Image (cartoon, rainbow, N blue to C red; front, side, top):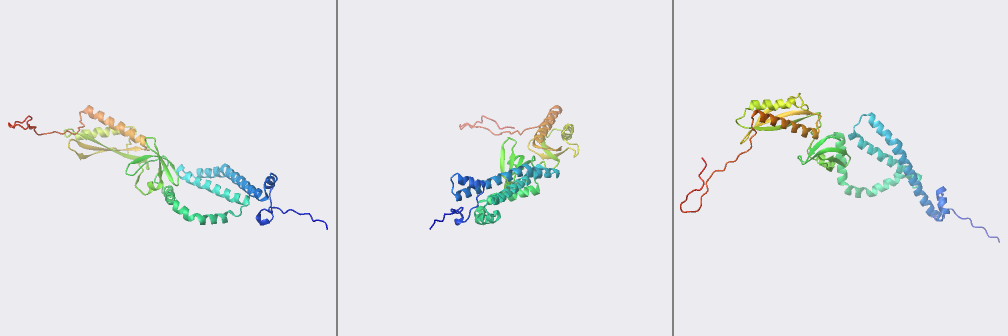
Length: 316
């Protein structure tokens, strides 16, 4: 009786002995010495990576520039564009992973994603409470627009201040006036009082000049207003004004109020410094005194002698 030649089964080591349809890459790996199951798994991983990288590159080269151009045509500023571009990058990555799953032969990505999400929801929710709260706060910053990139802001009762450099969904980066970069969780800026001095197109500044009780209030007020009107960066409308606001122990306080246009921190510090210096110079020329507190000590000093004679006589 003649022997019947054995016919090898494709991929008998994988898929429970079923047929394993290897592609060009799988057959090359099988020829290199891998088993059919190993070659099939390696081929799937390679196909997944190729599809993922290819779609990601296409998205970065074609899709994201189109999104950026569309946002520019709508005249959206950098504050609004950054989170939208982040969402576009996430969308490209999501599509790349979904297509790569199918191309690699791993089944339906969305079915797999549902199982993974169900298993990890509890753990992720517990671990990301702060992240999620900051994410929601970032969404409120994006919609409410309490500040924009380039604005000078203050928070925590003025403890922190600086210029906003970047706004993301989790943190906001602020450059202080000492050139330090602060990475601030968004909840810090939405749960507390935030001061934005440059939100409008002008900023009112105040400064109190102290003069002596013997000085002429009207003349001092005229000098304060005149120097404000002379300064090129102080606005004429609204006009600068002066009010007597304080009666101290050694001086009277004249509060000057004036406005500057298109304010930022550098302008605020420079303009106020130049203005105060000019007023002080005029006060010196006009003989108007800026007094400082004087304390007088009265009493006597005596030694423990029988004579009871005082060394220092009381002041009259």
